[in-house]
Length: 240
Image (cartoon, rainbow, N blue to C red; front, side, top):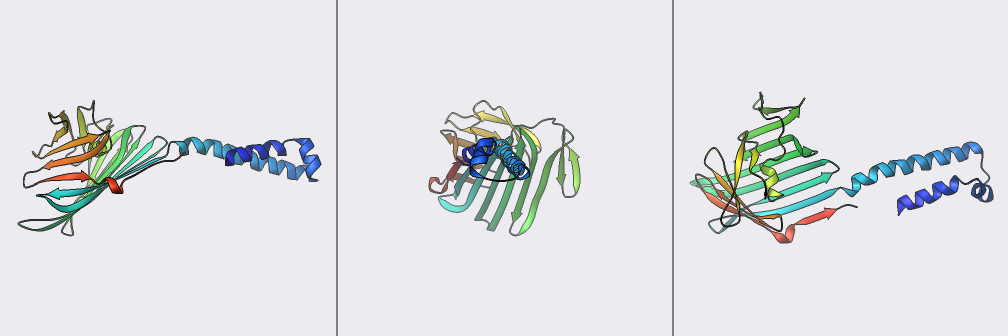
């Protein structure tokens, strides 16, 4: 609607007879007005395709262990043009021999389907346990952890573990694990899930409904848990 109004005004200001009937202004002022509306119109024309592709998705989960609610997880995905920003934030409070509070934050940025940045942060009982970043620099992936830099042998990474929370891996055979710095296999299970086994022996199994991840089973060395979608606190927006 705004674009239509600006376009109409621009056409009217560009019409000599309409100017003559309604305004007595100098040629200089007319040129300035025409230039203003032309610039505004072109700016909006460039901006609208980007806005039409803007999408925001937020999913909220609860974390269950032995029937008890021990934490929460929030996922966010923002698409703008060719870029996708993924975010995972979670907090767990439980007791394994002694009380444990774990906070985790993972993020990834994809440009035209390729990973250009990711980060992983872990804090246990207030102490930082992991702080890692991966960047695509001059067609090479570089990992920064504890002040040390390391080059990865992979030329392109187009999907990582965080992507599994947002898209069912129907045809996906492997996925990149940022923490382990390796690709891990994705195996379809008999109960309809997708199993990912990590080099340390831990296993995650993802389940989907209509393309949305509704449950994750976590089977680790010292504990097991389930992450369950909380449908009442989720949102999806598509800006047009």
